[in-house]
Length: 349
Ligand code: ADP
Ligand code: MG
Image (cartoon, rainbow, N blue to C red; front, side):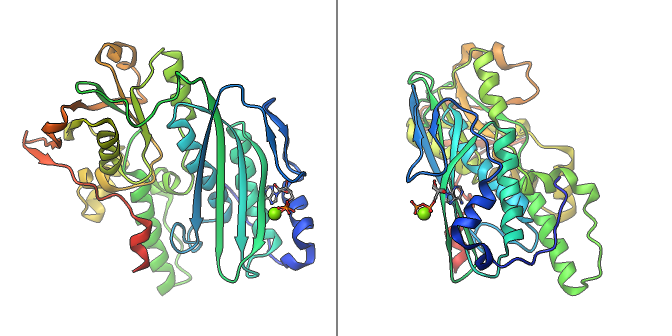
């Protein structure tokens, strides 16, 4: 995970808006020939030869993140990841982002430097040009909005709507870790509130804390599928939880699905953490969000191409719409799946 943190002292007003933008973006380099004009004019100019994929996410302090346990550098990194993940879920190549920030004067120049160091690290690692954005003051808190742009050939783009009955349902990586990482961080934060001298004991939870604080968008899976010559029939990224994403695929593709409980990919640390928190691991996998894995369907004849890959797990298959959407339990009972994904809106009440 990232190391930091610097002393924070410089008020934003000392640099002014333009000085701040220059300061934060000074080390960014353009990497793609599709970026004709980057930061510095009234608008960026892009030259996408293929179809353009565009996606935006808005992250609001207190709704989507808590700075009590989310370091700013991680927040910057994660804000980029959630957007890239949406581009990859279209089976496209992400090439540019814009970054818009609104923050109150409680934030210092050093704090925004931290945020930007996470954004730059993500852009560097995922080969992305930061081509613009907006920076403004706000009366309260921090809001960050990123737009990601990518491109893909028309025939490569994968929609939520292409799944057919009997297609195999496949997921990358493992699930539930990000939610359990959040549980651990929230618990440590409560301990800290009661006893500020308590040292957080996070070492044994490193994998799941990283899943929460530093998720990775699955660029590698899009590249892997291309190398294997597998075009998914439908695809979505897992931001809200497996059950709600599966329901999106089923709804848009007008199909049903059977998901097998014994196939759900869980890291051993997730299983032991579920036991510790007295949580049912299947419920965590179905409803825990923010894993940013890819959920997709493939035609049965493509099974041989993916079956040996440790990054991919077949967890079920699509069915006729009238059959509905079910979890087949370990006891071989059929349980209807309902969406209980995370809903940022709910937290306002
Ligand atoms: P305008 O007044 O036209 O909105 P700005 O002064 O806000 O222009 O921005 C100047 C340049 O800096 C533009 O290219 C804009 O896209 C870029 N920019 C502004 N804020 C950010 C940011 N947070 N990250 C990256 N680029 C930014
Ligand atoms: Mg502006």
